[in-house]
Amino acid sequence: MEALYIFMLAAFTGYEVIARVPVILHTPLMSGSNFVHGVVLVGAMVVLGHADPEDPLQLTIGFIAVVLGAANAAGGYVVTERMLAMFTKKN
Amino acid sequence: MSAKLLVDASYFVVAVLFILGLKAMASPVTARKGIVWAGIGMVVATLVTFATPGMQNFGLIIAAIALGGAVAWWSGKVVKMTDMPQMVAIYNGMGGGAAAAIAALEFARGEVHGVVFTALATLGALIGAVSFSGSCVAFAKLQGLMTKAWRLPAQNAVNIVLGLATVLVGVGIVVSGDPTTTQIIAFFILSLVLGVIITLPIGGADMPVVISLFNAFTGLAVGFEGYVLGIPALIIAGIVVGAAGTLLTQLMARAMNRPITNILFSPITGEAQAGSGPTGTMKECSAMDAASMMRYAQKVIIVPGYGMAVAGAQHKVYEMTKLLEEAGVEVSFAIHPVAGRMPGHMNVLLAEAGVPYEQIFDLEEINEEFGQADVALVIGANDVVNPVARTDKTSPIYGMPILNADKAQNVIVIKRGKGAGYSGIENALFFEDNCRLCYGSAQGVVGEMIGHVKALS
Image (tube, rainbow over all chains, first blue to last red):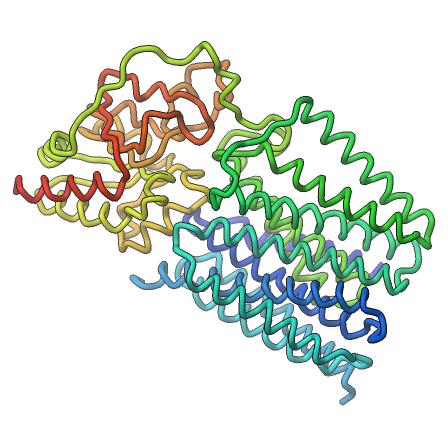
């Protein structure tokens, strides 16, 4: 039940954050939110951390999860940072 | 302080950092700070996760982070600005894949119990897997690895049947409570295929909307898996992105006057127009003629599109703009909301070239001004200036707001070849009396124009 409240409040927050954004920032913001869900890396680490060390299947799936999560986070950061750097140059 | 408390407290701070970071990214002034805050949050989250009680396999975890992180970091650094959209797509797909893999591992461990947990794990797996395979297809298309929009016969029927089958297997997993390996494997294969099938027929200006939609999908998938794992930071970050991404997707779809359902289920294809194409002749003109037309104009409006991005011509375009301004010409840029392959794609590229904000205008701001412009210079844009969107009810892009470039005294179009645009629809603008076409890559043609403008001043 508690989680339902978190869902609702988080959804509302996400909506509010984006509601008034100039078009020029749509791409960087999409990229930025893409980076933020890279936190899936944490979940991937936790599941791999609890996988059975004797079970190659579990280890493989967990390993893939962490690789993908880390790529999402690292790639998302670099790309967003590069885009935003161009916007701040002149301000 | 126990390790558990430390971890939980850190996750709380991380969630706050993410939300503040996103908020800051919503304004050009604070945007740079925003990504740095979110970045700090991510580093803290990653480090503190090692302290989670009961963790093992540390060697594998570190190796996986090093591998995925390094490859993505490097590819993100070296990619050209023009190729950004597909990079966002592929990184997003990886996030979706990670969420799906988390669900797969939880099932493999037999750690998912209870209807609510199973349902959310399954739903997250479905959404994550669709986002993964769909984003891979989107990447392949934008990267030019896949040039044609594939459309199956009875595409919508296939979508629906496949979608239903996936949902049925998913429901079977939830109801059984203790799914068999076969069920799980079937479910993942169906979900992955579904993502591919949905994305294959989508092309042209619809692509950015789909990337944004998958971004929202991944957010939701991460949120659901976060619930299954009991990590509030994942729930908050995932759902915030899910909601923000959904809104962003709606904004984009609205800008094109195409509901999301149309984008997914009735993609734009050139065939719809067969036999009713515009008639007349296309008139060529040399870069020199075009240059002198602009040099002696009062007001020039430049409409950049994907062609400028592909050619990487934004620097040359700005160089020419500065020359024209020195000659006393008023130059402005008109940006269609979906020009390029992502909303704001053109803004990013023009910002890279150094064009000041004040010279760049949105569709609503500038559309009235085309009537007073002497020259509209269309650089590698096509569908976003096609007047059939205003006039031809049978056209697949009818109703999409367009830039009224045709209202200018003269229209010059820089175009790679004589073919139709990305959507495959013939552009009636090119056949208008006031329109001239300069064939060649944007980079080359604008380079020539610069030479001629210089010679004239």
